[in-house]
Length: 346
Image 1 (cartoon, rainbow, N blue to C red):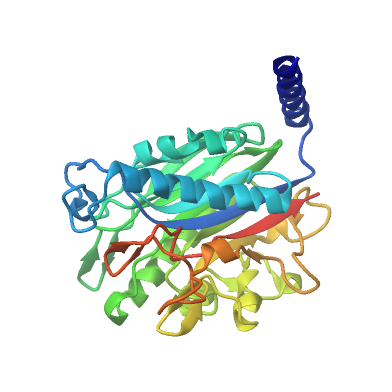
Image 2: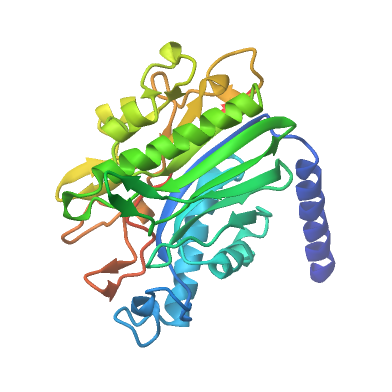
């Protein structure tokens, strides 16, 4: 009798999931998450991944790798619980290859999401790339382009960093393009011109899409290694703070006002930053345009997802994102960044 009752419950749950999958969502969650060095335990030829091998500096064993995957899944599930549904689109940074993405979406813990992914290898020396998770019941990819990051100005050449991923497709019948970026690091207080160049690359390609596909909706997301108020974001990608002032050829950046109001996604030497930025073009900024961005509260349009389990509760880094390693010691955390997202609806 008990086994029969269990069987009935399983059937009812399966029927409920099947029924919910047939009902188009009224809104979509679109986000970005720097998952902090998601490496497998096998050497990839041509990549400087020795730190993340079983005999490497971090002693990166299959057990630690499995814990890392489950921790990322826990964050994604927590966001789904918060929003009542999984992300329709979730950009990722710092993933090594397609294998780690397949391992992630194949976890039992994420089976209900039904994620597929898009990834292209890039020439980054460490082997960390960007990628896009998406729900096939919401989004139908049409075109994928890996935009090479080639910098050649005044004799300065630079082409050894992450490509910018562009995926164009239909989100519930409407044409969208998603850019996912991880712009060059700030290490050594360098790279401002490179980040500006990367932002200009995104902007140039977004304008080409708008000319080719009038009415297309564009979302730019990524770890920009700059705050939303920095030159690369305001001048080079033409992002503005006030949604009512978004002009032709500009982007609305919800995280400008959030940064000014003290929100943060990562911390460095006591200062909080929002490097994890999502912005939208004008076609997502008003009524009468199909899907448009929705407010997260009375003032803001973005979300920083921050929960106690994702935050260091003690020690030197108390109150900051609970990372995977601390001084090469595995502490079984999640990431040194909090994820961000926006919600769009009709």
